[in-house]
Length: 222
Length: 76
Figure 1 (cartoon, one colour):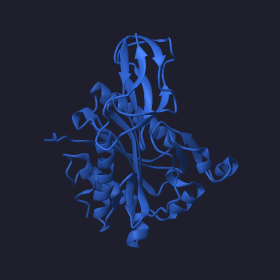
Figure 2 (cartoon, rainbow over the protein chains, first blue to last red):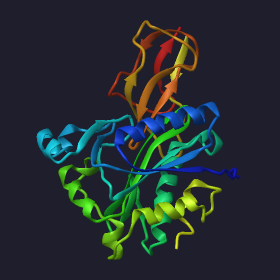
Figure 3 (cartoon, one colour):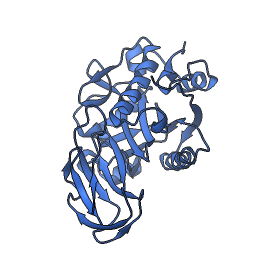
Figure 4 (cartoon, rainbow over the protein chains, first blue to last red):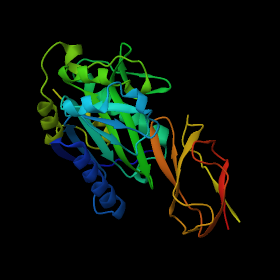
């Protein structure tokens, strides 16, 4: 039976991608040293495109100069996966977890990341789905949550991003998300009303949820 | 001579790609040093060196596919 473990939640707010990566690295070191228990870093990013280990640069569809004009930074990172976009309309969750305390199983961890997003979406009456062989969370064939993780010494970093605001979706047209021809959607698009990310973050931080397993963080949102 | 073997990665993950060797052939390594980075569909992870010694042979190079149980390299 799985051990019941608490997690800390740390809200970084709206933060530059690179700075958040540094925070992840520090959290990673602290978890590894046993100074910090498994932690979920929650944040939003200024516009950025990131390329995972399997990314083809050709999946960025506009010239670098145009990205500069749009103030979109590009980063090559050590997570798995291809290319993705981050913007302030997404809720990003970086689980820095010691899988030795949970389950040393990469497949399991990816499914748990999906479960986290599915639980969060369920609070809004949105049923997120998995598609076998295509990691992430989908609604009616459109992608709402992207996942790319890195694991070192069974401690995780990088993570998942959930599209909340509909305004950010336009920037996904600058790339082939995950190297695939897919359509992205957002929570706002699906529920047809305005949703403030800070309201979700506030509830997550407030602790009105079951902390015993990190995938349950979305539950209890009203 | 010790084999560097890809362990089981969990249910449903049957292969990975060698993405980066942290050491060159012939270099000294210590036990538990990050030896090689591997990539699956959505995850990257490192394989630590199983022992201290010299990385005498890189059998699977960057870009190669590896399955659990296969030998990536040798340490002596």
